[in-house]
Length: 193
Image 1 (cartoon, rainbow, N blue to C red):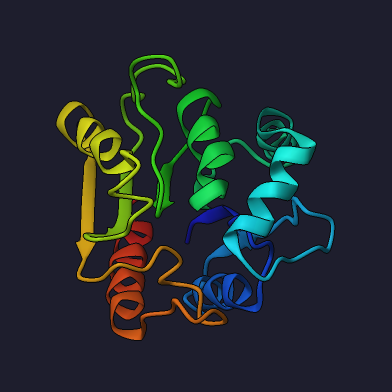
Image 2: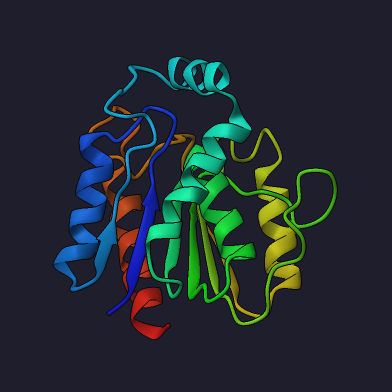
C-alpha cells in the first residue's frame, strides 16, 4: 500500500480526477486529493491557465508544495499537467519521497526551470500521448526523455493519440483504452515501491 498525494490539472478538481483517485483507493492505496483552486473548475485549459496566471504560476505551485507540510514524508507525488509542477518539485526536493507519477507534463532536470537533478532512489513514471500538442509540441517530452536517460528508475509511457487530458473521464479528451493501460502501469508501480 502506498500513500499518494495527487494534484489536479488546470481545469481543476474535476469528477475525472476524483475518479482516478478513487481507482487508486479501490486498489488499497491512501490518496490525498487537495483542491488548489478552492472549489473552482474551468470549462477549458485556457480558462484554467488564465486563473493560474492571475494567481501566479509560482504561487500556485508553492500552494501545492505547502499542502504537503501537513502530510507524512513517505509519499508518492502525482500530478496531472499543471499539477506536475508541485508534484515534481516535491518528488525532487522533499525528503522521503517514494516516487512520482507525472501525467501530460514534465519539468526539465537541468537548465532554467529545473528543481535540480533527479534524486537517487526515487522512481518515476511519466505518461503522455505521442501527438499531444502540449506534451510533445511544447517540449515536455524532451524533459521526460532527459529524466529517463539520467535517473536510475524512470519510465516514459507514450500512448497513441493527440489528447492532453486523456485520463480524465469527465472530459471530452478522455481515452478509455489509454487510461486503462496507464492505470495498470500506475498500480504496478505503486505495488513495487
